[in-house]
Amino acid sequence: MLINRTNLSDTFVGFKTIFNDAFNTAESEYQRVAMDVPSATSEEDYKWMGKTTRFRKWLGDRVIQNLSAHSYVIKNEPFENTVGVDRDDIEDDKLGVYKPMIQQLGYDAKTHPDELIFPLLSNGFGTLCYDGQNFFDTDHPVLEADGSTVSVSNMQTGSQTPWFLLDTSKPIRPFLFQKRRDYDFVAMDTPDDEAVFSRKEFRYGVDCRVAAGYGLWQMAFGSKLELNETNLAAALAAMRSIKGDQGKPLNIKPTLLVVPPSLEYTARKLLQAEQIGGTTNVLRNAAELLSTAWLA
Image 1 (cartoon, rainbow, N blue to C red):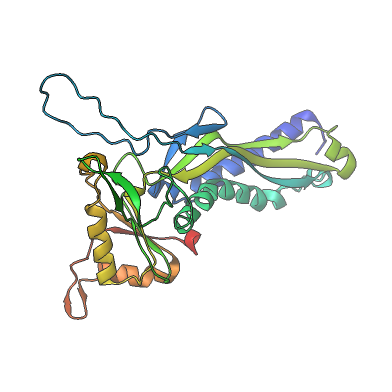
Image 2 (image 1 turned 90 degrees about the horizontal axis):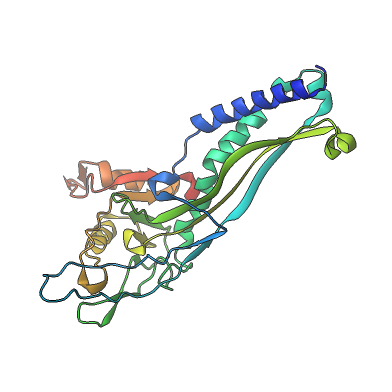
């Protein structure tokens, strides 16, 4: 193959097709727990988090509800993934040997959000969210109808392998995946490029500007107790009973149990078995199951 602009352009188109095919067929799990949020600047401030209101009977003038002000900023970060292709291989038309590498770029790009989102669950016991408390904490401050503040928990303390209950039934998800610039396949493939001159290497890669962060803690429950009937039932009940400011019911519906592979068998038994220990399993179908290696 002659090294000229036309052939290099054809090579780029071929590689991009391979990348897109791999990207589109790869499986990703993050959207089961997180919502995509577009970003138009270097960072986004989610001031609306924690602002809950409630209707009242309209008697006299409207009552302006004074809500707590929160500031939770998520900064976009740049990421890249790049491979080099030897000029000699292009010249000798040996591009087939690079197909798996380009496919891997597509897979990596599709699953990169998973790499960013799922560690948020395990790290949530020690990472702050919008209200200044750890995402999973025993004393989230919630305003009562009478103006007093109470502490609300969305976790079970312990020392076992963590597992998580999430409400994924609403437009707002427990986690945020923020996109400033989506994953884009790019190249440095001009014959007079410095890398070609110095190392006879053309470069192909993917880059993006994204970030991951926490949504509403009320929609997630983390446990470090043993995953069993008693603790799962208690976690389900605790989530359903969570209220927002002013005592407003939030109608939390724990719909998804997220576990690492080490807890998958136990979780399947709790959620899918008709009987446990010879008695009817009252937790059957209480939630869907997501066992993910991204938690391992």
